[in-house]
Amino acid sequence: MSEQTVTIYKRMKDLPSTRLLGAGTPMCAGCGGLQAVHEIYDILGEKTVFVNAAGCMTLLAVYPFTPFRGSWLYTSMASAPAGAQGVRDALDILLAKQRIKQEQDLDVVVLTGDGAAYGMGLSSTSSAIERGLDFIYVCYDNEGYGNTGQQTSAATPHGARTSTSTDARGFGGFKKDLFAIWAAHRPAYVATVIGSEPLDLARKIEKAKAMKGPRLIIALSPCPTGWDFDPMESAEIGHLAVKTGVWPLKEYENGQVTHTKVPSEWLPVEEYLKKQGRFAHLFKPQRNKALISEIQTRVDAYWAEVERA
Amino acid sequence: MYRIRFHGRGGQGTKTASRMLGTAFFLAGYQVQDAPRYGAERRGAPIFAYVRAAKEAIHERGVIREPNLVVVADDSLVPVPAAGVLQGATARSVMLISSSESAATWRDRLNFPGTVLTLPAEASEQAELCFVGAACTGAAARLLGVIPRAILEAAVREELSALGEDIIRRNLEQALAAFDCMEPHAGSVNEGVAFSVADAKAPDWIDLPVDESDAAAAAIHASATSVEVRTGLWRVLRPVIDYDRCNRCWWVCSEFCPDSAIKVDADGRPEIDYDHCKGCMICVAQCPPHAIAAVPEQEFSEKTP
Image (cartoon, rainbow over all chains, first blue to last red):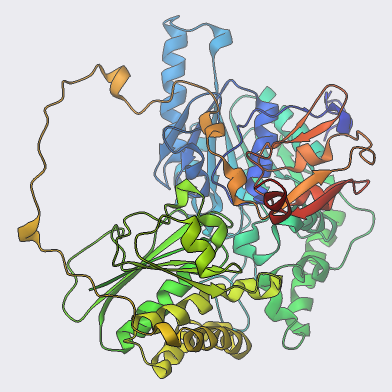
């Protein structure tokens, strides 16, 4: 967070204490994605229209029920940014024709999972950024196709077991660096957030809301069902993702990447891994030292590079 | 044709139970359909899964409305209207409930037209709950009477092959024990007749006037209507706040609650909305002064019958 920015969220007590998002959604108990989405919605406010690609969150607004205070549009998995373009254009036309007043304008917010953001929808996001579309993109990243039973996605981390990577080493590929891909388009703003760090999240959403142009947010979303842990641990696993350095909290603006929360002391990644059933094969029946240290080495290398920069 | 409907909660292995039973039927020489109801597979939420099996080709599709056997893996679902446990049952239907209460109690309690049987649930042992699906499969196989024990074992092995020998062994123990314990009722499920297209009656068509599009469109005209959905029914543990211990912090519980189910008043006093709390217990884990306790939901239903 750059120093000249004035945030109204200076301490935890400044966070909203009332909730905009309605209860009664069909998301799983302990959903880390819903945790982040309700925190984001509290900051964005009621004057938003959500454009939702197919995924878990599609189930938020199943007719006649919605947790939102305003409109919601459902698109296919690959085309939410195109849907957002249509909504933005319609609002602009209504503004130009003075059919709505400036204060009735809405923020257009895309909501997709990692399957759409990292994979199927990347092309339409790329072209929306290229066109300078004035929108906010929120990706809830639970590192797999959670809604259909946690198949591997382009966001699945190395070594994780998914329903399509079941062998002894788990997923052999690597999590795509979507932050860097988005930032390479030079949009107005890119940030990573997590629901378990609500103050950091609130400042970033506040900042994004005040800007124009493409603003893109990735929220790591601990997923009790897909990652296999007790729903009670959801926030704790979020904390560990940050404290072990697995999920760097950062933002991109004006060509610069800034890390917003750098712990003074790192916990070993295995503190994060061992809490989750999807990594259980790293510890049982015997400890897979090589794979654990491979994961640790990659995290260390990332932060070593941050320090050099 | 056999029509079997499974009811359970997300996380109990209900979908897997239907897969195992379907595979067992297949290995026993049947044509089989098995499928969970897509999109509802959320942890704690009511889950439905369906198995059809017949010696001839199956032309029916979709959900099972008139089951020959209803398997209920979680007895707390019986009073939940959304679960529809009793739906479509006839005098020829058999219902199997995994419960710590007796079959006689359930017969008294339910206006179920067919046979009610129970599979003794080891509710006290939290760790065993995840094998209830396997137990249901084993019991169902015996009630159907056309699946031999060895074929049940082969089906469980096949379906769980990716999960390792230890998990297979523990599931098999449960499945085979349930198979054996249903011996007195072996073969008590009647096969239903296959519906024929020729018997289907054309619906009486009613011409409806065309509405204005703003009245007829699937638009929702109010905010946050999701509160009409009582997700509190998912809960098996209830978070209870000890207000003497609560130090009116920066509403950690409310902020971290994914479900907007904890409201905070102007004095910083939190209140849990039990109509919607799904029982994830994040608040219990995160409360700084440990002022929230997790209490089994059963203790409340016993106090207020």
